[in-house]
Length: 165
Image 1 (cartoon, one colour):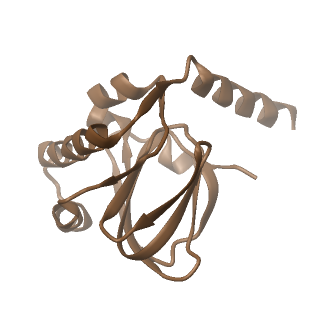
Image 2: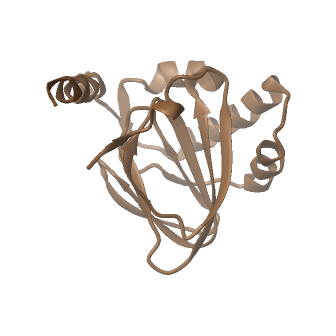
């Protein structure tokens, strides 16, 4: 089953920041970016490209409208951030027709993200700066492939299924 998270798909200029111990969440999709940063233990990320084990000090960036879920077999302590496309629109415009073969990367400044975003940082431009920094480090490690409209096909299939059922 694939969940559609409407609450993470409509608003503009939002960041949701949470800490989670032993994160488990079923496959879901939304029209926002999602960043997960593991601080302790190990977490399994499941995507349409496969399963990936994230260890302490690693992060993953999930693209809008790409299915993903999480599982913790033993123990994990992680932070996750869901943020709207509007915060990093130039980056979104670059990746919107692409998929990532492996979304896992090392991000050195997780503490900076956590301290600012978890405390409800109100400066829109500081938030954009942090998020673009994440996107930049992600791109340094990422292998992107063209989707040739497959994301739109998935969305259209989902909408058609909902209408018919």
